Image (cartoon, rainbow, N blue to C red; front, side):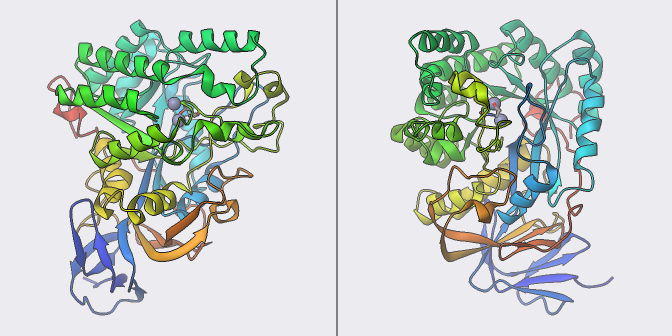
Amino acid sequence: MKPFDTIIHGGTVVTASDRARCDVGIRDGRVVALGDDLGEAPQMIDATGRFVLPGGIDAHVHIAQPQGEGIEMADDFESATRSAALGGTTMVLPFALQESGRSMRETLKAYHAKADGNCYVDVSFHMIISDPTEHLLGQELPALVEDGYTSFKIFMTYDGLALNDRQILDVMSVARDTGALVMVHAENYDAIRYMTEQLERAGKIAPKFHATSRPMVVEREATHRAISLAELVDVPVMIVHVSNREARDQIRWAQDKGLNVVAETCTQYLVLTEQDLDGIGMEGSKYVCSPPPRDIASQQACWEGLKNGTFAVFSSDHCPFRYQDEKGKLTPRGRSSFRWVPNGLPGIGARLPVLFSEGVMKGRLTLEQFVAVTARNPARIYGLEPRKGTIAVGSDADITLWDPDKTQVLTHAMIRDGADYSPYEGMELTGWPVLTMVRGRVVARDGSLAAPKGTGIYVERRRSHLATLHEGAKGGS
Ligand code: URP
Ligand code: ZN
Ligand code: ZN
């Protein structure tokens, strides 16, 4: 047997549970040895003074997702995964949105066609269920879960996407019976519509009123309702993109009660506030996303939630629109009301550097906690363990080298996604991912790409470790 293709030597290897000064031996894309002085290999990577971490998994991204009339996302799979690689992420989980009149299987095929051969990092798909027909629930979903599409997102708000409580119960019971994981966007649709109409009537149409139209109570109520519906069905649930203390406390309450509830927060809720939506002219539209960024106390609550495990996953919710673009944030309709400004922020490339700098370097999180929420937990929760999310013998060699001493001011030019701005532009960051490796291949080094697109492949997933705990779930991982 040939020894190693690559050895990473001289660095400090950190996983979600351990830290050690050791070399990493890699063969055929996998980690095959961890130890002192593993010798020589054709490719030697010097990691002296670097942290050697599992590559990030961004478990919540939107890429090339069809939008309504006249609106277009800023990224295709090439540009989004380029930015991911430059930012230290080795795998992304975008959503395949069920389109009306098209089967979910066909929809997934279309996403595969967009992704195949175009990705710098590995990819797997969640589904978005917008129309839970009998056929989808009874036939398609069970077969798709068997085929490795083991998670789906549902929305409690947004025109054309919001499901009512009965529909949510139906989807959840399919998840229970198939062992899939349901992800919930928790905001109260009718309350937002009511608030939006009130604001518009009062002439309050600027982007900043987007935040006013969906206050914390709207998120708190829906979070509690989603948890309660999941409890009724007896199924695990993931509450995504949680923005504040009130929603966080609902989740903590459920977890303390022993319910199978996990949750995610995102970059924007740690470092942005509602104030960012209050810019000159349409500038605030750059920060319009749902739920909206809140206030400093909410940021603090999200940090606490990451530290104490209430939030198991940290994602970007990358959903990019260009600013200087009539198909993006400056859609002409957006001037008539915030309600027409496309919701979402770019963040796939900035996610890890911002968390590393603001979290690890500022002492809010340990390196092990950083690895847990950015790699190990998403891998476990979304059925990618033991292949992804750690550095262990047998795991994929998805590895990021971090230089903890590198300080720089973040610019969009470093991020290189398809948008024309970064919400995190101007942040002074300490620590940067200087090398990103996907299955043993270096895809980014010192801010440049080092491998062609197509290096990233589709990865089929197992069931979530949460779902397989349920007796009713068929099969298992
Ligand atoms: O504003 C956001 N978050 N847009 C992306 C879609 C979603 O709800 O995740
Ligand atoms: Zn959402
Ligand atoms: Zn999202």
